Length: 228
Image (tube, rainbow, N blue to C red; front, side, top):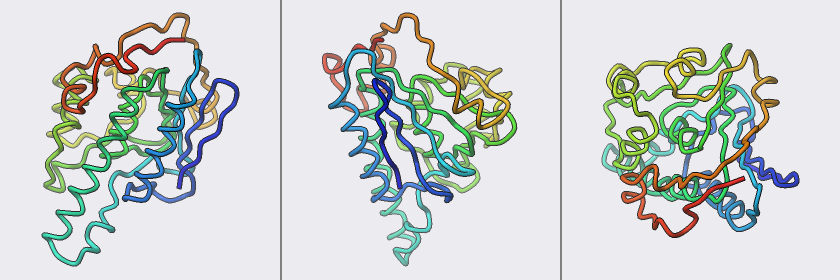
């Protein structure tokens, strides 16, 4: 499902396996547990890198698990349950006392895109993988915290319009050009090998995203400063 490796001050969180890394309650719980470990073990100079094995970074919530409820009402409840369970994952990433990087080597879709965007920096490959919010195509509304995350992380309203209302499948080159990712590389190896070069990292992260912090219930005095 997912693993955590510590190499010196570097924490590496990996979504394991060759599947789509869809978020069901078990995987969400595992993610939250590992992120809580990262937060508890953080020291000055720590950095988190999140990546995934296989073709997919994550394809979002586990719709098969939701539909296994056996009715439309049951499926809707399960989908809402996953959205509620996922919110603390985003809150924990936003309040980490360290820089965080999402290394996207495959498709990051819906909640998978949301997970990546919750990091401070996104890097992805040019030759494969898309960023995609398909909710307009499948007639699903977004939770308030996901709307707030995209609004505060992607300042250009035209980019958000294309992602949300057009359902644009954004590849690496375009994502870099439009400021969604920090950098796009030619292949998986380059993405994985891209290193962190923060000369001075001293920003009050939650102060940068006040609306999102309020929706997530985060206090500005707890883990408000991330630095190297």
